[in-house]
Structure formats: C-alpha cells, structure tokens
View 1 (cartoon, rainbow, N blue to C red):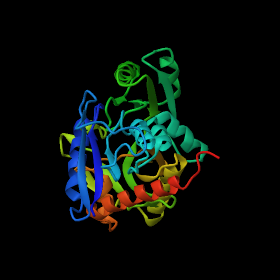
View 2 (cartoon, rainbow, N blue to C red):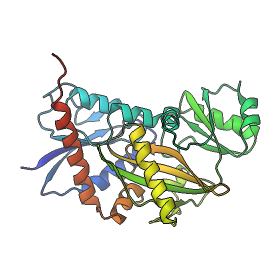
View 3 (cartoon, one colour):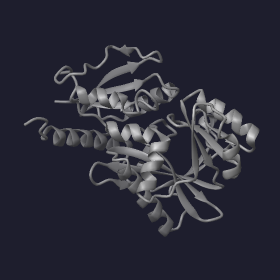
Length: 326
C-alpha cells in the first residue's frame, strides 16, 4: 500500500512562488510506486484548497505523512507545524520550536552565541524607529546589512554604505517585519551546507555561492539565473571539516530535526567562518542548493525525499510513545 503524502505548498509569505517551484520538484522526485501525493495548496490570501487540515487527532484519516513546502512566514515559522502537532500527523522537517527560533534571526543568533558559535556583530531595532541610528553608525563599520528579522529568500534585505542608506534600509526592512536586524558586513566568500537527520544529524559536502550582484539577493537567487555555485566548495580539508562541524552544531543549537541548510560567511581578512543563518525548509527548486549538495554527497533527490519522509515517521512514532498524562 502506498504511503499517502500531503504536500502543503504556496502560502501567504512573499516566497509563495518559490514554494510552488519547490513543491513541483519534490512531487516530481517522489517514487510513484511508494507514494501517493495529496495536494494542499494555500493561496496568497491564506485560502486552503481543497480544504484545510483538521487540527484534531484522527481528523485527517486520508493522510499518512505531511510534507510542508512553505517558505518563510506562515509556514516555516512554526505556525503550520503547530497545526500538524494538534492534528497528531507526522511531518517532514523541524518541529515548532526549531522552526520558530530559526525563522527569527535574532533568536537564532542568541542561541548560536550561547553555544559559542561564531556570529557577526549586530543590532536589533523595533520597527522603523531611528533612535539608535547614530549609535549604529558609530559602532558598526560600513558596509552593513539590514534585514527583516523574520523572512527568507533575501526579501527586504539591503546592503548599506552610509547613514542615509541605513535609514532607508531600516524603513524597507520594517515594512516586512516589526523587528529589524542590522549586521556588520563581512567581506569574503559565501558558503552553504546541508544538514539531515534527527538525533544524529550529518552534514553534506558544502558549496560556495558566487553571486552575480553585490550580494546574494532575491533576484540573484530566483530571477536572473546568473549566480554560480561550486560543489564541493574550494576549501582545505580542515576548513571543510570546520564548516561541517559548525553546521551540525548550529542545527543542534536550535534543536532542529529533519533538515536544514546552514549559510556561512568566510571573512577574507581573518579567514574566520561566521554562521549567517539557518533555513529549516530550504528551497527544492531546480536551482536550489540543498538537494544539489546531497546529490553530490551521494543522496539523489528521490532517495533524499524518501529519507526525509522516513525521518518524519520515525520522530512521530517516538513522540507517540511518550505519556501526556498520568
């Protein structure tokens, strides 16, 4: 009997179109001898089709396991994961805690710092208030990066070179989120590393990102098709091992399960690696690096999808053995 996999995609975030493309790639890679796909599309307005999942145990007898393919807010941030927990359905990827703290760049940085993991200097602002503008300009060197705290795919991010640009960057980021992160710019190289697993996560061979623009923004990722990638990354064995170790430690710091992609910066002047962010539902489009890194590491897309589904079911079975009352 085929395993019935409910693929949830679309969503209300600014990454709706990316989600559609990721879901298409995942569905096409599924072994049709093993899996029956159930489509759950969420419109940009939040409308579910054919219907929303029922948030109660045994309320969705047609579903064996769920594969959320929702990037960004209202899907990658713990909201949908909470719904699936209420429904007592196994689902691919991180749980509620890891999803929410990984989406919030400030909380992720706090947890990484608490574990002694390297992160760049940063400030946090609430909304588009300019109260701390002079303080930031005096304490962090330019260029800086200004980001919404809770968003993905480089939406709303600016690279700023002076106080005037900083002000505009804060206003832009604040239009996407109530909390804004301002980070010290790092001059160097960009890398990504894929992590897979529950209690014993493993890291893939890393890749290097060579942006065609000033930084790896949304257009560079999904529109222009000019970014170059190098797999495996041109790093020494020692630096590769360090990057993989940090990727797994970041994964553990946020208590991630299932999958994640960890992004890094390697500063040219110091040869130091910095963790930039962690993405708990990485892209699965034709140009996305998460499946490509695993393919290079010996796990082709169909087997990767199968492994992710198996991990979801394993975690669910372990949780169902727990007691929730006396």
